[in-house]
Image 1 (cartoon, rainbow, N blue to C red):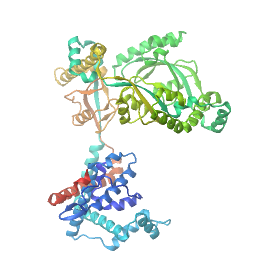
Image 2 (image 1 turned 180 degrees about the vertical axis):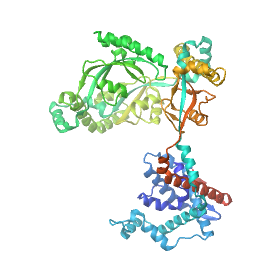
Image 3 (image 1 turned 60 degrees about the horizontal axis):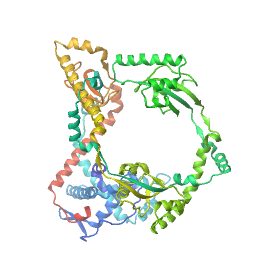
Image 4 (image 1 turned 120 degrees about the horizontal axis):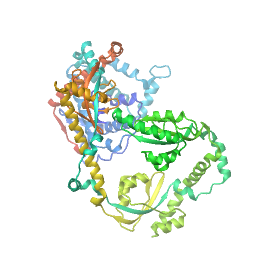
Length: 633
């Protein structure tokens, strides 16, 4: 947010013009936070005042403009001291720039002013020309005089003229722009070998003392936060829907009216067998797993039950359900899996399919063609929709009744009986559990956990689609998990950590062998089967199939061709040993197509740098005194 203000520093005088261009018609709002000192001046710039009233107006208009440009912006940001200070700093800069323009004899004529206003799009009529009525209506809607508006536009033009005057000498040469283009557009490829930590996991040796030491040194990692068990009544359409009666006639009428909305895409019901293998694993490991899954395929083709084979061999989470994946449409699975699955007919089993997870066998249990759903397919969905619609109309009445009963001293369980709603009990809940489960704010969750044992919320808590009344029935204080409960997790973590260290040692050893004249040829021969060449990539750090690795990209761009980089680079699960394979310069036609744009961008960048330096110089020499600091808190 602050960057937006900084980028527009040279245009602060356009505060009114900016509002016109984006057609932001701002309405005044309350002045909370501006009470206290009543000095009519907020600051002095070289003994010239910035009136408090003007600051308040500009602050409001800037905040509203930011809301319009960024609808999701947090209101707290717009009320923060940083934001208010940024607004005041812009006004100080504007005053300094206007004074400097006058000192240099730079002025805006009446003719220039008239031309600027006449070309503002917001004031154009249907014929594209300036419409005086639109102009007057705008001024009237803002309760602003023409003199005030024209003064602001004149000052904006004055600062723009000053900027043009100051930045005249910054025009870049074509050679400079070409150098920038070549640097930004050049791509490279690397040769690399991936050394996986998983290959060293069996060599990791973790004893009980190491586990105990880690447990003692990291108690925060094993702390179970304070929890509570609550009983509650939820007033939402979903919770109240079960108490609503929906007749078959209502459901059929709803279906007839909404029939066109009950469409389905092509779907399949499938199950699979997965043998996992890392996507960056050596080819020999990939081939070994492929051989295993082909043996399972032979068993499935011979008539053995696919579900039982999945339970026995599959390494995916669906193995407990016989590999069942349920119904799904296109876009739900990774591309290779989807393409293979949708190419099969009901009852068919695929050939082995490779994805980033490993090797799959896929069996199609059933298919659904694209088209409309019949009534039986959607009747449960229709009943729920009608019931929730009816329930939403009763929420207010039932909630008001419950609040009255609660105020009379009645317990929630009895209130649930009286109002005919469900009384439910939570599992052990933390702040995070409550916010996720109900969609309430963190503050609301804290207020529930802070309830005295046996007491209820006095007012309803807002949750997703409704409200909640809660009663705390159990307190569970924070505690630390016993070592026995987390010992295996610690061992696995330390084993992986140690395996990664061993992988790093192996990577550095490999680099040493590859960079030594005596051993380079032999080592290169030994890793040749695992050596891969990347796809071309740029300086942004994203390397296809390897992910974001800015340090690796930076080192590779600085390297010489065929020279091994002197360090190993960490990736999730392992390390990379790499060398520069090839530099790929940008094409001449790409330069010709982008030359003008790059020249303009470079000119603008340099102009901004020069102008900001000029403004900083003005500020350093100016006498600036803020007398109403309370307005910035």
